[in-house]
Image 1 (cartoon, helix red, strand yellow):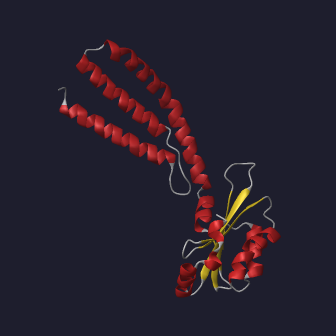
Image 2 (cartoon, one colour; image 1 turned 180 degrees about the vertical axis):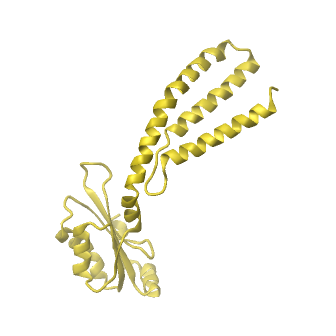
Length: 207
């Protein structure tokens, strides 16, 4: 990341910046795991170019301004700024570019707005798993016992049913992703597909 942050030497990128009329500075903090240092990325939102990247142990305004210093040093026109609404980030961009429009990152805004629905969805998925997983495991245990003893054709059919049971378990273990992917909705769609497939098999009848 540090190697890619030497934007001042990137002639091709500077030419694109000139064509765009400037840059839109995006600041985003990423914490890979709790307890680890936060990685702050500063990008030009118009080109996707990483302008600065640093591990920081503090997110105070002074630290944010130091992180943004290489961007200021580029001397290019800043058309706007984007942050995740963290107070220190807001103060830093306001002090560095006081007359430049600012916008809160849409992803962060939507993620925060979806917290209630996401929590409700998680509760429903947990209830579905508690109700269905024990039954599925019991069915699979029974199938595993029957398959070795069955005739080849019947064993093949039982193995297909085991695949269906495995697919249902996979659907129940689907995770959501804020702000738009809800686990219960994804699981319900997958279960609908399993049901439709079983209905098609029933219509076909035995071979």
